[in-house]
Length: 245
Ligand code: 3SL
Image (tube, rainbow, N blue to C red; front, side):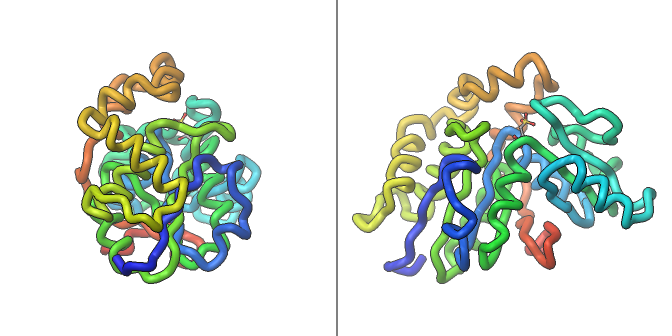
C-alpha cells in the first residue's frame, strides 16, 4: 500500500455518480448475495460472468449466444426470475452446474453496481469468500481505490459495509491512517465493532432478515465464510473472469 493512496467507500448504488469512479480501481461488494455468488461460480469453474442491468439486457445478450453455452441467472427481490435456470443463491453455483459455462447474471443491486462502475480503470468483485485475493490486489494497485457497496435500493447494507471495513482494517493493519476518507472511517469503525462476530452481525442485518423467508437457510452463513476461495473475479473486455487464473 502506497502512503498517499486513498481508499474510499460508497454505501449504495445510488450514492455515487458514474463520473466519481472514472479512472479508479473499483471493488464491487454485494455480500448478500451477488458478489458471493459470482466468486463461488468463478471458483467452481464458470468460464465467464456477464453482469447485466435488467431482464431485457439479459435476453439481448442471450440471443447472440448458443443456448448450450450460457445459463440465465438472477433474482428479483430475492426470488429466482421466472424462466431463468438459476437464482442468486451461491449454493446453486456448484461445479456440476456452472463449470465451463457463461453466466448471464441479473440482480437487484449487485449487477447494477457493476454496470454503474463501467468508467473505472479496473473492476474487481469481492466478498468475504475471496477476501485475501482482494487484499492482495489492493496492495498492488497504485491509483485510488473505491469500495463500492451495493446496499439495498439506495440504503446502506450492514453486511456490505462490514466487508468494506474488513478490507480497510486489514489493509492498514488495524490502524486507520490520518488521511482516511470519511467512508473508510465509517466502514473501519463498523468492522471494529462487529468484526469479532461477522456471522452473528450479518445474521441480524436487515437484508438477512428479509431473505430468511425467501432463500435456502445455508445462504447467509455461506456468505460469511472468510477466504474460502482464492479467485479474483475481474473485468476484462466487459466480462468477469478469474484474473488470478
Ligand atoms: O441485490 C442484489 O443484487 C442481490 O444480491 C439481492 S438478493 O440477496 O439476491 O436478494
